[in-house]
Image 1 (cartoon, each protein chain N blue to C red):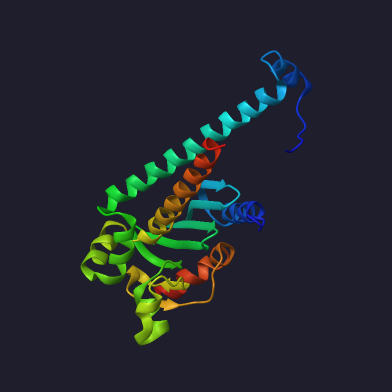
Image 2 (cartoon, rainbow over the protein chains, first blue to last red):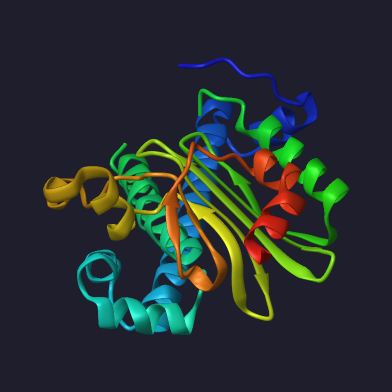
Length: 109
Length: 135
């Protein structure tokens, strides 16, 4: 349990809906779920955009830019600064995984 | 994150606004485990692009200068097989995910290993990079 400071008026309004601890816990839980889902959806949207742009998933992309010179040439032609896409692509995959784990943890509580 | 990423990002943005024109902060997002900053701007007649990523699996960056879509100079540490071969020789296959700071020259026709770069170094030395790479 953690004690936090809340605006008295908000606490009084929360009391109108029942046990104040339960009402506020439920509100925070809903907020955390909503924020986690938003983060996951945003990350997945960006991952799909990169997959569409380069025609492969990240794992294939990361392998082929190091092993397939024709693929690398096509990537360079499509975007001379493809590295800035690559670093964010990896980042968004990790972000989606992280927020999915957070969401699962909240939902299992 | 245990480092003060927010203050770092603010200082990079401030420096970008001092050194560049038409500055656009495309992304500036910080959560407890990860952070991303992306800035676009102009330096004289060239395009400057900065992206920094901090996460628990390691930090990544790309700092590029382009003119009409052609790379004039660029720095990043995304795994690059030429750089990895240069550093590890015959054992390069064991290090394909190695993040080694490197510099791309004009048109990405050359690449060399460099010391760790920061956005502040990049912004502070823009003029020098352009002169050297256009010679």
